[in-house]
Length: 135
Image (cartoon, rainbow, N blue to C red; front, side, top):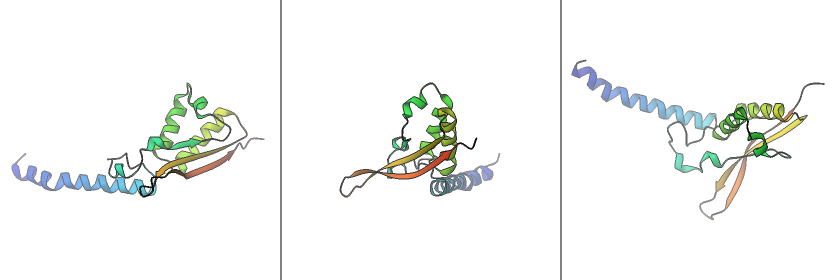
């Protein structure tokens, strides 16, 4: 490879790839609720780590669902990472199937710290009510 091609790749190719990665990250953060900690980590110190997100299921213990169930750990972990409607729906359907209940209510909460007054609180990101469709 001659020097002009190397120069072109280094001068334009690598910066172009970096801009594409950054644009993709910003798009996923703003449209699919991807954690700012993932996908390159741009903006990762502007929010609390996604592992602090809380999944709440009234009347059920999350620990009992996670015990010895790899699929549940993977699905709920992905929900905490990317708490959008699609992942919430997948998690709720799996919980409904695993728990063998008639209906399920799943919520995901995000911790918020107000830097001006130091108050810690939670904000509801999304929730879903699911019922079995069988007779």
